[in-house]
Length: 445
Image (cartoon, rainbow, N blue to C red; front, side, top):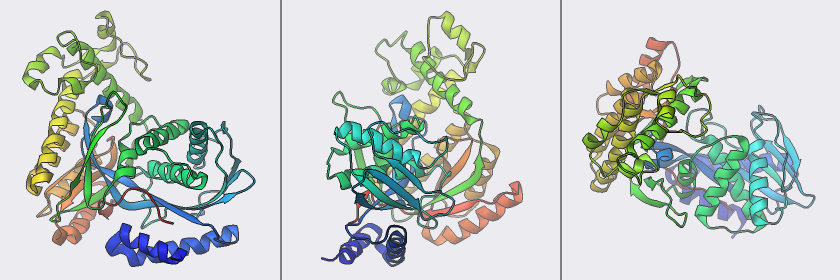
């Protein structure tokens, strides 16, 4: 088969009903590659999707359960090898300056916010692990709207870029690695940039399946593996992601306080349950037996006086008050909701799944306290649309996005009503992204 025939077949498999539009997108990308680099001989094309978390918020770093889904929005990289050991990278969006650097085991990081740092991180981490240097590369990155992963919307555009870049390096170096090790290396590559996340985003981008969500147990086995399961999403509902346009820059301190509250909960529960290392360990104990062991609020100083250390968490001082009971209650009940969501998907109970999303939002708002006025307006507007099964904030909180389960016949009404209501209440424009659960990362040709 010719390159075009192989690409057409791959596009049909990955994108289904959207294949015609994607064919145009990919052909235009190939022409752009030729205009930048001269020809497209020996071209490789790799893609990786963003993700949305259906349910299971702030449970991952507590060794809990999550349920993300890969999206039909992706980052595409066109690539070929260079013989001179140089990475020469362009982006189809003019706002991203071209990047060039030599392949090496130690790659100096660029300025903070430099988009090339994600590629530098991948090259450094993977070359160290492979114990050989990959070849130089000509790279063209394609992720512009409407098919690319929206940036800054909490849909893991940076992880999609990292995974696509890592898969490109492996493909050009003709090097294979086990999928879970690949995911770990991708996570390490994002650490190079300064992102200290878990493994949920990478798992969703790599293991996503068309029309499916992914149940993931974030506790590794003793061998370092993870338990996961693909679950078909019901045809009676579509995933709609709504971006509030709000991104609170001071939320990092609030996030760290939630992490500290969970660690404090572990330390306090360990007095009665000595084997506890994460909140996940008390999941089998009724909440009524746990809540009395946890204070509503306690300062860092009080914990230290009890001999409890929280580890290195930036931004805390001795007077910081931690809402331990409420935060731990959210994690405990959210893990339960994820398990019930698995049951709902397996039985096709879309109404029950919608109720779980709504309950998850209340818990995130009231117990974990990670909502904000703009997100509440979006939730209110979503709940006013007849037929919507459920909606909740998704992502770290304090801005970002909500996700809603919407029947196909109500999508147009949902988009219009939510945007109108949000603008009337806040003066802001809400961006609505109708999404499908898409396929995981792949080498197209």
